[in-house]
Length: 477
Image (tube, rainbow, N blue to C red; front, side):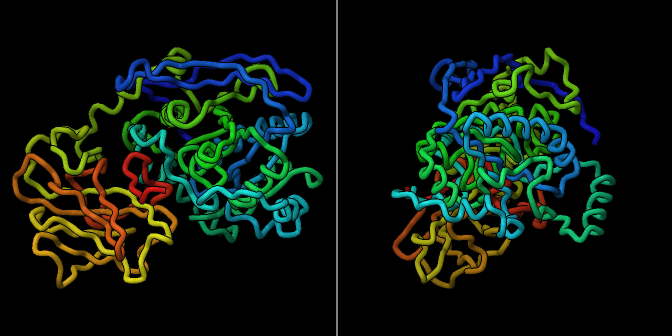
């Protein structure tokens, strides 16, 4: 691994020492952030101490797989996994519940006692809506500007090392794109006490049947799975659990070549900052084990840089040409972070949408565009939409291929158009229509003034992983 070690700005890491409190209780020093004044975009770190009853607390181990398509992600995880295992052993000893959630790996555990224990947990009297699905955003995130661009998947490998790693995975009989088969062996599973599940309803049954009020998330990757999985931070917060992220026992998928072009660990800290501001507080492993919190040997930032706190505002004011930039639709070019002013070329737009199965009519899904916005091509999840022969005179109707939609999941919609000199982007918001249901896509999108069809009409992984929270549209819950 060759981390850049270069950091022009920030890191959220204020390292806190903590005293381990032994017994049935867990005493945590919770860190969160509050905006100094409404709308300022400047946040201040706050702390509060809480004592959680261990038997009312669960630790969920998110996607700590035995392999990954990104070599650097593997190296970073293997470095802190032994420390994570020590955290889990101590929490288990004090009486906390441990739930292992290596997604897509349940087949390997069909006969494991911990898996059977999760499957047979008593059904909860009340099951929260959509608890079995991915959650891309909660209400507290709606006005937040997402701090990094993860739409390339976040891989930060050296290309030669990545190719060598992919070849090694293939030689092992594994799919280089999805090589995980089990949880990492460095994490012990207690067959007599623990649970194994990657399903939101099963995890919820375990929590409710055991009277769990508090949940701590550890594992990877924070900006994708730890936040969004059915058992992740957002679902736990949305459904009323007292939640904390263990911030030194996680990692992100972030490529320093993408906006805001900071080193990997600063990008990771930016996402931790987002969590502390808009999702839940964080804690560190030393609050369970004593001593100091974990710091990666690959993190070569100076102590002063690591401890410094720089507002996200300093990072997101401007994005260079060639980067996806937030834009309001309808809205002016000058309002984008890139500040295009007047622009006469073709423009790419993208957003993500979530369409519940109950919302979609058997007649299919269409996209309605204002005809005065000119000829616009559109794709959903990389599949081209086709023009409908009839429709209102002032609207262009595009039909979404049935096989392009992921229902009850996040989809990426990409538009390409423009050409005439103008000072604003799309003048009217597109509308998704299905039967009598309509979803107006009015609000924050992303735009790009350069690009090609192959690289710009899609993202190289499911939209729920690569899409950011600040360009999501979905029908009201």
